[in-house]
Length: 77
Image (tube, rainbow, N blue to C red; front, side, top):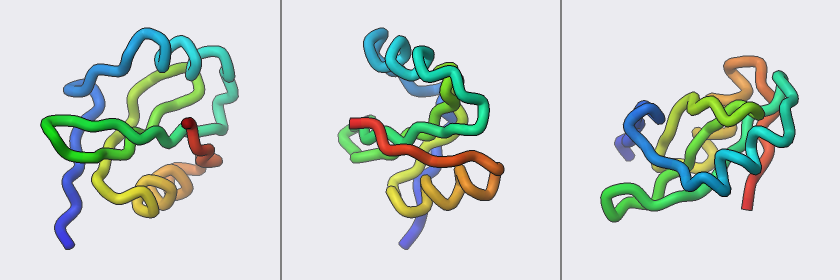
């Protein structure tokens, strides 16, 4: 299966989601959030301060990417 990875700078999070992510402010945490982009289900990887890190179409791969960058991934609903 081919992974569809997108730079998060190209993505738009709702103000509510960005605010929710900023509230945590833990530099070792990455939040994994499901979203739809261009009709595709994607998994967003964001730093605790809301900084956009990466996106992928595979949830498990999102967690792997976070761990490979020494971050503790947490699911955001």
